[in-house]
Length: 136
Image (cartoon, rainbow, N blue to C red; front, side):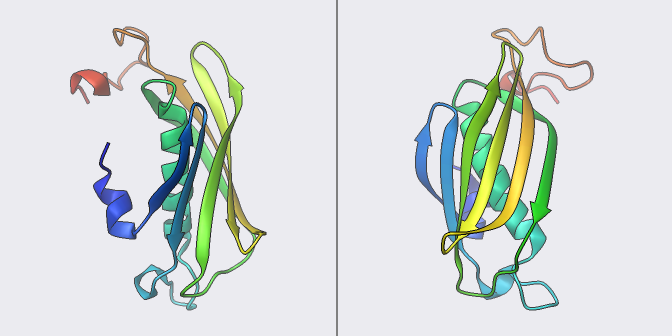
């Protein structure tokens, strides 16, 4: 499936398996913040992309909550990967840990939980609609 946002950021899928994903990119000049380091939004988008791919590999899912902690800055030209792994899977929810790494060092840590959509969408949380049916 094509993801225009990932393409715009220059992100590539390196691995996709049930409950897992690895997405990679390179920090470009247009990804820098006012300090000359990778913008937190770029790193978050990288991690969130791996999270989305891993969680949706088991069927349609929507995010319930996400958190990201940043540990070290990256400059332009840095190669970076987001490695998502499933840490909990239940009938209705799943939680993922995404390590953002560069040159073997942990740059940031993202955790996210999704709601797993039912087959007909009847179990979608109130007010969210069913994206699989084109509802908002």
